[in-house]
Structures are given as C-alpha cells and as structure tokens.
Length: 93
Image (tube, rainbow, N blue to C red; front, side):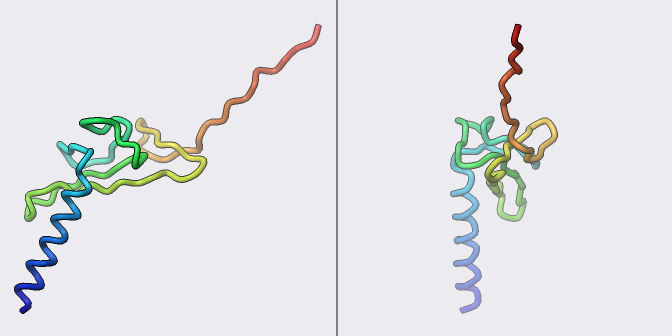
C-alpha cells in the first residue's frame, strides 16, 4: 500500500512540474524575466525560477507576480516600484 501511495505522489509531482513548464524553457538554474520566456512571452508571471531536479530528470518552474505597483527589473533580478510618469513642468512667458 505504501508503495502505491508513493508512486501516486511521485506521478502527481511530475504532473505539476511538467504543467508548470508549458510555456517556459529552462537551460540553467536561475531567475528569469517572464517577458523573455521561450518559446513565447509568458504573461502569467513577471518572473520565474528554474530549478533542475536530477532525481526526477525534470525542471521545476515557479512563476511569480510582483504585485500591484511593482514591475520586474531583469538587471537586478528584483521587483521594483513601478516608475510613474510626470508631466514636464510648464513655463509661462
């Protein structure tokens, strides 16, 4: 019985891992910008982690959103406050 439960849990974990990689291709561990995800830009997240699990021979992809008022900065690999645009000051003659 324990072997059956372990096998079912392993299959469920693999299904979750494979489902999470549907729009993202990983080539090495790290943090990446979702807008640069392959094969096409992934709009379900702002950034994601790629982690290789040798025992499963599979990539684990964890997607994240930065939250309201924040955007992903791929240079520093962090969520930052979304820049606001301000109108140029007007001068009177």
